[in-house]
Image (cartoon, rainbow, N blue to C red):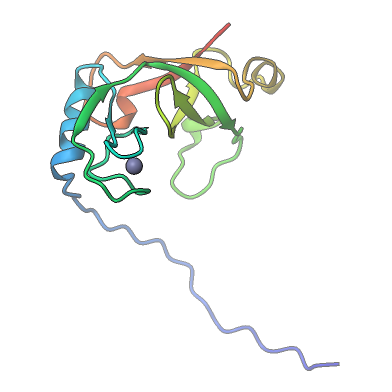
Amino acid sequence: MAEEKERPRTIEAVGTAPFEMALGPTWTRFFEGIKEEKIFGTRCKKCGRVLVPARPFCPRCFEPMEEWVEVAQEGTIVTWSYIDYTYFGLEDDMIPVVPATIKLDGTDTSWWGVIGGFDIKDFDLVAKKVKVGGRVKAVWRKEKRGCVQDIEYWKVIE
Ligand SMILES: [Zn+2]
């Protein structure tokens, strides 16, 4: 039997580093749209796919994506999860949360969002209402900051 190695000594610490991220022209235009309750994608002239959020180039064809398309604010749940415990970066009042990926109508990618608008503390109700393939629509915050959280949640369409 191998001799058990001694664990190295560690110290627990949490560090933070405030930073600003330059959005660049594509995401700047995308988030200006979000402020006006519009969701924009860009269409690839080669493969025809519409990607959301808007991208400066098609990651499949490497072609510039210069055609802007305002897309639907309704879509289909591709996958979802239920988080009922806190972990690094989440505050207690953010839990539970139902993150999902949503394929907006007329687009070719899934976008991240949070399902809400009903009592999500009731897991049985969540499991009943939230389905892969289920329909959702964007619900916007009144006060906007030009970021993805301007969509307060995605409401299940029944
Ligand atoms: Zn393409």
